[in-house]
Figure (tube, rainbow, N blue to C red):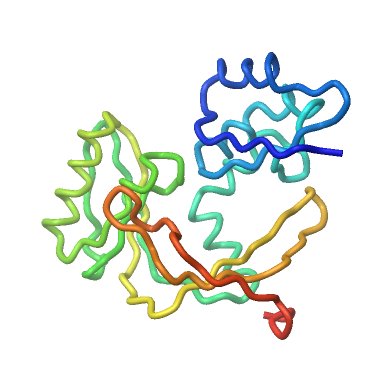
Length: 208
């Protein structure tokens, strides 16, 4: 038997200690479903400390593996490996707040931090030209006080319809109960967040 315990801001060690002090049920394990990249990465980092008392997302029970797969270059490589089309992209590296914008970037472009937990949704932006891209990166560095960060810069593609795969993995098997068609997406501080969607079964999409 298990209970549901939603926790949205888990990213500090003392939060993990609070979970162990106040939320452990001696009679059963508790499921924790992280609802953002920060909490998912924190649970992943502290897996060995929490796994005796909680069911949490993981990849082959390896601490840190979930956060490693937040790297978008790894995600793109996996997508190509299984035959999916991916958007052309360039890596833009910032070292000690210094960076060079590759001449090969096409505009408009879409820029985002390489790792999801760096800057959250505030790092995502469409930039119509080189000047706007440079300004966005400098504004991002100033607001987050970063000196070193990697960005992925992709060709901007207008998306008429977007889908997400709903799934769960126990580390070995993957279960996909349905697909989500995104109907409404957030803007400003909630840019890119799914606000409304339609869930439908995977019947007919099994081989996709």
